[in-house]
Amino acid sequence: MDSIRSHLLMLVAEAVAASLSVALLAGCGPAAAQGGPGGPPPVSVAPAVQRALQTSEDFSARIEAQATVELRSRVAGTVDRVHFKDGQRVAKGALLFTIDPKPYAAEVERAQAQLASTRTQAELTTAERERAEKLLPMQAVSVQEVDQLRAAERNAQAAEKAARAAVNTAQLSLGYTRVTAPLAGRISRANVTPGNLVGVGEPVLSTIVASDTVQVWFDASESSFLKISQAMRAGGAAPTVAVGLANEDGYPHTGTVDFVDNRLNPATGSIRVRAILDNKDGRFTPGLSARVRLASGVAAPSTLVPERAIGTDQTRKVVMVVGEKNVVTPREVKLGALADGMRVVTGVKAGELIIVDGLQRAFPGAPVTPTVLKVDDKGMPIVPPPAPPGPPGGGEKK
Image (cartoon, rainbow, N blue to C red; front, side, top):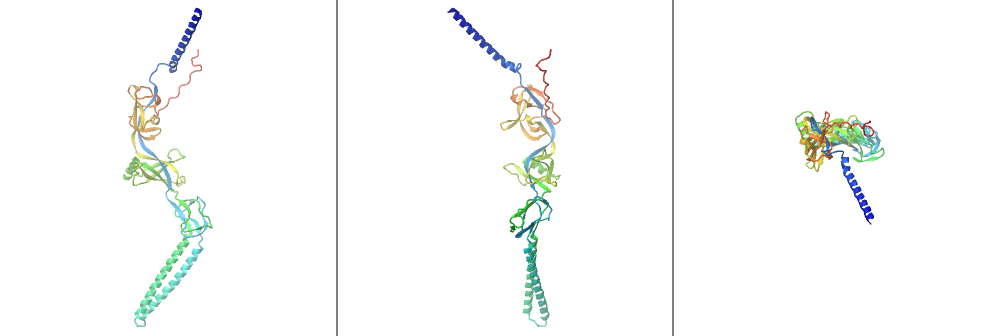
């Protein structure tokens, strides 16, 4: 029994020793993973910079034609011929459609014949009135007869005028059988083909848009409106905008503001603005979306920080500032324009150190170990190149 008891005690002692070894190894694991004694977490910081910057705002825009015309027939008849190809550019006055002119040519001839008849009648009544007036002093005719002849002459002259107006109307209708371009531009497709009957005003034969210049419409902010108004009141050159299409980088095209609406939209705080853009090369098609950049026109000192250094705290925009004793302080900022990856802000001063990398390790009121990065001429931090890898095997060769 004593030997059994001794054997059990030895087994218990070995189990306790194994448990202690496992606990010691588990306790040593985190320390080994940390790689050394604890300390403030490392972060990369860069100073806020000040630059004389021409501020600008970007807006979404829509390109529209400066003039659009719906072609409609002003007379009823059968389409005799279409004189253009769908989508081609047409000059002002170019012949586009021909309505069958024969009925209207016949109406012109009838009206001219009626005019000739009334003119002959008017000449006859004039001659009779003149002859009667010569006989009146000799009392060969009565005064009443002369008055009747004068009235007949005036009626004949009025009938002649009515017949002349009928001729003009018939000639106008005959001219309307030739549908011409009221402006130069690009025409759409023909909505009717030869042989179709058209009425007065229906259907729309085609449409033409003026293409030498286009309009760029956008909703500007209240601050931009005040800048535009100030520039226009000063009497200088009209404000310009830079325009870019969806498939273009940047804003390669320049337009001129020529219209600002007469009231702001109180619901959005914006106002409609129109700029004119040259389109002689046909690059811009009405209906395209575009991006518009409106510059302030005045370079003013501005404080900028890297865009990636700006975080969000609920509804606020904040940056993490490293102050005295390397303690992190959150700072609320108001955002301005974006320029070359740098954001114009108010709420920080030039030279203050802003955390740009390692934000997840920075906590308000806690110290950090900052590494100040060099910046380029625009203020963007220059990321140092990665350290070269060590020799194979993890140690020096002996």
